[in-house]
Image 1 (cartoon, rainbow, N blue to C red):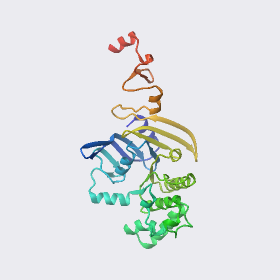
Image 2 (cartoon, rainbow, N blue to C red; image 1 turned 120 degrees about the horizontal axis):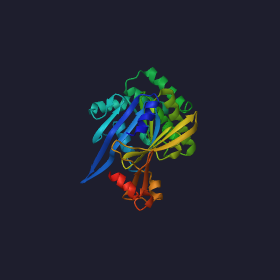
Image 3 (spheres, helix red, strand yellow; image 1 turned 30 degrees about the vertical axis):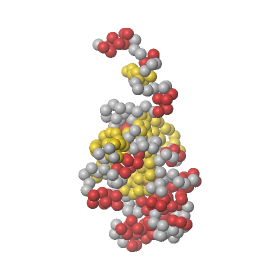
Image 4 (tube, rainbow, N blue to C red; image 1 turned 45 degrees about the horizontal axis):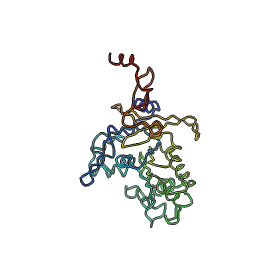
Length: 312
């Protein structure tokens, strides 16, 4: 994990909630092996609201499935709260998913039962968990009010818009008071106005309940509304954007490249393309930074005196 990330997380005063250490996931397809995660490191503090972004095949969904207890890593270490996800039995996984994690999927049909009303959908997970009827009734009403659907509680999904369905799904995900909410492209099938309402619902629950929210998305509108954006590429975290806010207004923004424990650093693709870098690059250690040049760029070549110093 990069020094920058550790220090930044340590300074916010929150307890460490998610720790991924050198995480590897390999899928076997016929005679082929597909490496979905390649030594990924990630720290997330309790109560954060962050986004995971990256192109298809970057490992975002694989990481989400592992954090959600839907899949096991091949190697490495991953902890969520007090749970070591590599040591869980199948029964432990079921309890973990039921009580620790809430899921919101991109496909609205995957989130809700079509023959139940919005309120009945929210009450269902609580009924399966053994909550008393009165508590289910009060909590479902409270959650739907918090996501702005107080007047839509008695409607079935086919009477709700796509954005309203997703907000019901968020309330369903929060029904059993999970510590973590995982949202996979929650705004992928709705218009911009509905996407804004969905994001506000996530933000409200994050602030009022302290739930840790991780959004997997290609939607940069959503990514710009969170305080931390982790970019993924080739199965590893590659970049990180940190924002500081005054209320809802971002007052500063910094972008970092992630340096892992082995010294690997992924340069942004835009930088690589702009300088036509490939195969090899030249490095020069300066007093306060490292210079990186394309192999053919003479700026990266050391003088004869520099070469002699380096050899000594």
